[in-house]
Amino acid sequence: MKFIFLNLKRFDVPVEMGGVNRLAPVADWAKTIVEGTQEGLKKYDPNEVEFVQFFPEAHVLNAVGALCENSPVKIGCQGVYRMDTAVGGNFGAFTTNRPAAIAKAMGCGGTLIGHCEERNDLNGVLAEAGV
Image (tube, rainbow, N blue to C red; front, side):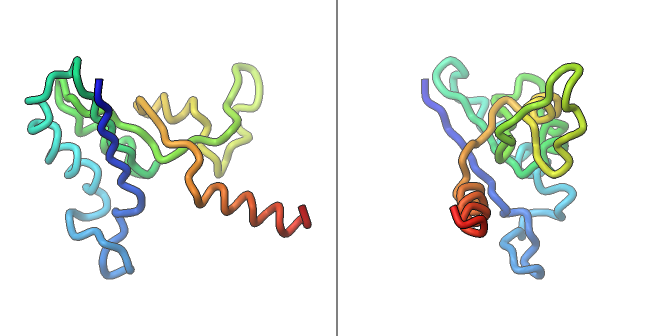
């Protein structure tokens, strides 16, 4: 089995705002990518290769909604928080973090963990605390 991962990072930012997105308006960006790739990827045997496209969270629902029937594409998110929600517990405590439960509920079949900016952010917090 081969795994092909497409990590789309912040390629959604329009050129006029300092980004590289010339593909589509931001609201249609993920849909354009999924629709533009899934048919061509159907020629590969799904028992031999898995395709996952990792999107920033704002684009996950749009990407999942663009999947056609029997799409070879799986949608993933850019990361999840180190803690998750629990039944009867901390359901509202993750206002600015992404628990794995919501990623799964949105249709994600995978995630990236340990981005360098997450490590740098935590290292910055530790440095500020003198640790």
